[in-house]
Amino acid sequence: MPNMSLVKNKMPEQEPNVRNKNFKEVSLGYTEEQAIDEAQRCLNCKHKPCVSGCPVNINIPDFIQQVAQGNFEEAYKIISKSSSLPAVCGRVCPQETQCEQKCVRGIKGEPVAIGRLERFVADWHNAHDDGNVEKPVSNGHKVAIIGAGPAGLACAGDLAKLGYDVTIFEALHLAGGVLVYGIPEFRLPKAIVQKEINTLKAIGVKVETNMVIGKVLTIDELFDDLGFEAVFVGSGAGLPKFMNIPGESLKGVYSANEFLTRTNLMKAYIEGSDTPIQNAKKVAVVGGGNVAMDAARCAKRLGAEDVYIVYRRSEEEMPARLEEVHHAKEEGIIFKMLTNPVEILGDEHKNVSGMKCVEMELGEPDESGRRRPVIKQDSEFVLDVDCVVMSIGTSPNPLIRNTTPGLDTQKWGGLIVDEATGLTSREGVFAGGDAVTGAATVILAMGAGKTAAKAMDEYIKNK
Image (cartoon, rainbow, N blue to C red; front, side, top):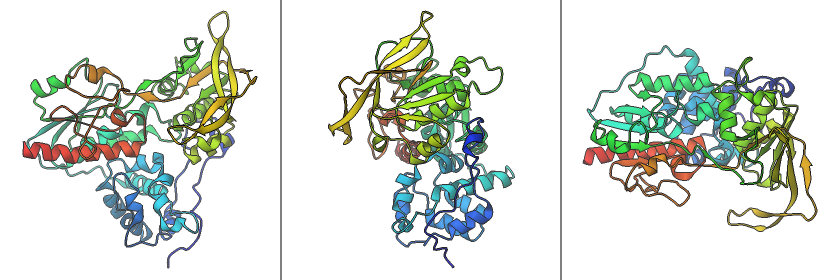
């Protein structure tokens, strides 16, 4: 019998006033009983509208039906045909605007908890995995992947399954890209990321860390000296943006990238860590996206007494996931809506001592369709803070485009590609993810990696 409940099975979570003092995962995951019960809410629609909302085209009804029958490993096999990172996607994908938005059950109630079920299946597999993976037969061809983030890992996984000799070149000392330096432990445990990467290594993917392409090697050298037949650029968008207001050079002002990297890679939350961000007591995070929520929630866990989200529009215009906003509010983050910084103030030691702000009001819509914020007359005030985190976006690092002749880019730095294939203006060079689109979601980057993998396979076969 199908479960006709109008609401999802509630996700077990740590209590807000407990979790905002630790970096353990907030959401605890479904039990087997909860997963089966939730899976039985799926109507197994013949036209499968949810699949059209998935950037990597997972056969959602089929895997959910396996869960409903208690066949969790079969469910994992179905997901794995389309996704190289199911435990990651089950945690960080914005399912509410993708697959779940298309779910028929959402018309008269809540949609099926597709993301929670994907997470459950991946976690169940990882807990019962014996480590035996069948390595594909080699096809004798070599491909290079630049960047071990979501786009690069997805591309590498698909090509490795086709028998390619795949090498990933990663600039940092750990593979994972934004999954390890950007997304906090309490949303995505790093052991889970490492498990997914180990699975790729088991099927033959090689990972070379501390390899800054454009410095250590150029793309031309990958072709000419190392014999790679095609290259995928998935180097992300790691160059932070600032507001260019007075005081941004003061001590205690961080980009969100730096703040989160110090927290996630340098383990700022561990006793005795060298990073100074533990000393902040009053933190303002400027921005309204998921990265801003991550930074604010990290600051709270690092011991800050007051943490503010400072955003120039209203809450309705915030791009962050509703779940992240909800969790942040539960954890005590203070939201200062319709507020914009105009200057960061410093003391005699050039440390942050406050942030001068103005109140805003919403005018006519701008090119993004959101109402344009305008300054309210005589509304200036000072926010008492000793740390400011700028989370207003990122752009691709110019290193690769500056060291690769003939590689066409947008004015803002994104690589220009054929949308259907990911092919750039250079023969044999493909690209996808944030290096093309600017900062976007993990799953969209993975979708771009999969698109490019298919095109690279065709390119090499035809060549």
